[in-house]
Amino acid sequence: MHRIVIVGGGVTGLVAAYTLLTEAKERGLPIQCTVIERERRWGGKVRSLRTGGMVIEMGPDAILRRKPWAAELCRRLGLREKMVEMAASGSYVRWGRRLLPLPAGLSFLVPTQLGPFVRSPLFSLAGKVRMGLEYFLPPSRAAGDEALGDFVRRRLGREALERLAEPLLSGIYAGDVDRLSLLATFPQLRAMEEEHGGLLRAALAQRRRARASGAASGQSAFFSLQGGLETLIDTLIERLAPAELVRGDAVAAILPQGHSGNGVRPEESGRYRIVLESGRSLPADGVLLAAPAYVQAELLKDLAPEAARILAGIEYASVAGVVLVYPKSSVGPLPPGTGYVVPRQSGGPVTACTWASEKWPHVAPPGRTLLRCHFGKAGREDVTLWSDERLLEEAKREVAQTMGVTAEPESWHIVRWPRALPQYAVGHLDRIAAVERALESLPGLVATGAAFRGVGVPDCVRQGQEAARALLGRICLA
Image (tube, rainbow, N blue to C red; front, top):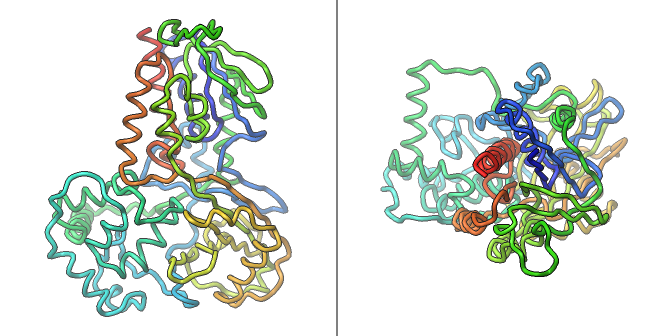
């Protein structure tokens, strides 16, 4: 019997456990799996509050379809019928107090339709000319990573960065675009430049290919699940019945089996002992770390000091959210679309506002409107320390000034996510590769998670699957 301990019960850890159990069964490998989560709930940042006939997402509210791993997992788990398409499309940028629509035909920051782009009030004439000149700019000859902000500024100009890229792209990571790694966040932008000579050339080539093939999926770029994204977590937990699931306890130490302070290392014993804060001790033939980087760093400081040092250096951004619930009659009609983002230059603590009940048909009963205000990004970690009263007042002020919603909400829900989103600084992938090299000497120990190669649900699904298969392969060869 191979005993595996997974540290972390978020998306990555639960998917890793599911993959281990299902693929070990297919290969006839006897696996005993234990998942340990320090919190009293599963799912990490995926949290769906179901109350009063509403589904209120306190974490992510959508899954990107272009990255197929989460959609494929949902279908494998029998959730195809619960996959929900977005009911609205289109979004805005709040420039000052005006909501300016994103021009139609944008393909990953790049305008592919001349008319909507020329008519857009989002950019000045000079900004539009500068973006159009991107077609004639030669690709960079420099190799290696660069800041996402530097890349967009170099290819498309300052206005494209400030009014489009910064609010859209930094919102995903709650990060500073002048520090975020291009290769770790949006490597496809570099690939577009290298393969086609520029972003406009690449977008036009893709559009021509789509027209030639007659491709038209009819599906939105994102989907959700009936009952909220936590439906995925609930289903995974149900399928992990053979595993031991431990909530509300944390791993205090990972030691070589038989460790007694005599310096015996895992490569000499080939086994581990997992010590929990409750005092319980578990033997393990394999360990899969799927906790935040700072937790992994603490657990690895004696086993792999270099890996621990690098992981401890990964910074995190803190965010918060306020969901306001109104009678639909007190809000009035909202602009068509899903919401808006707020550039740093527009000021204020709110980084985006989502019209949740317009975006998703399943989150609110008829007659209710849900508005979700997002707070926080790199450099604004203080928002998680604000009182409920201050967060609520700032959210009410935002919707009043931007959308004219002055009525009192009938209810509200506040969530804080301190140290929520890992920051992929320039050179991030090289540092992660160094972590993995440092762990190669530790038999049966694999580290992964949102701090490694992707923060979204699909990326966490992929990383959980890959880590489980890597660990399974090591066990098979042992």
